[in-house]
Length: 246
Image 1 (cartoon, rainbow, N blue to C red):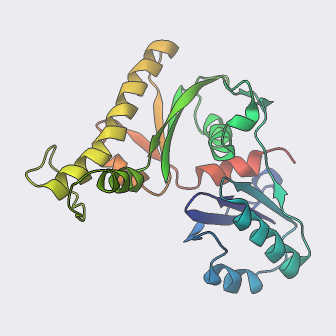
Image 2 (image 1 turned 45 degrees about the vertical axis):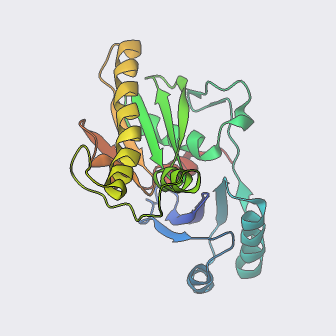
């Protein structure tokens, strides 16, 4: 059994399993890390049987990864294996000339996506940042785009304007008659509209209807604003981590 860990900017997600050895992944678990390992995580891992390996994808600050390293050494005497993007792996070829410039979470999402669908794919990962990656059948990554995440957009707007502090209130309408709702709706509709535009461009490039795969903490909120069919895969990065090279 392998312990697979995805450390994002905000959340730490993990699961147990080894699909390549025929052991399916357990349901994903997630905690906010606030720049350190959460207390609840220590309590859970202390009671967990020793895994065979600990594999990690991290885009967080170095301090979180170092705290994780200390924990895995203390609990199981294991050194965590940090996964890095590769230009070519399992038929996937990324668009970046320097693989190290592509976030490891995006690379792992691409690895998982090409196993999930034989069609063109647009991956939308909605977290602290919102990333978009376009993938053709056969594994050619066309590249992608990055926006601030939903909450990041809202906070930046309030911090850099004279708009009074408001608590955004989401609604089903397409526009709003008060400031809080206007901010809430626009911060969801902007990435949703970009996703629909990219789907059209990907369809023209590939000559086939693409699939939109959603993942990340705000994926469900964005799904409600989209006018296209989607596939929601909360553990997409962890699925890719299970496929990554040793």
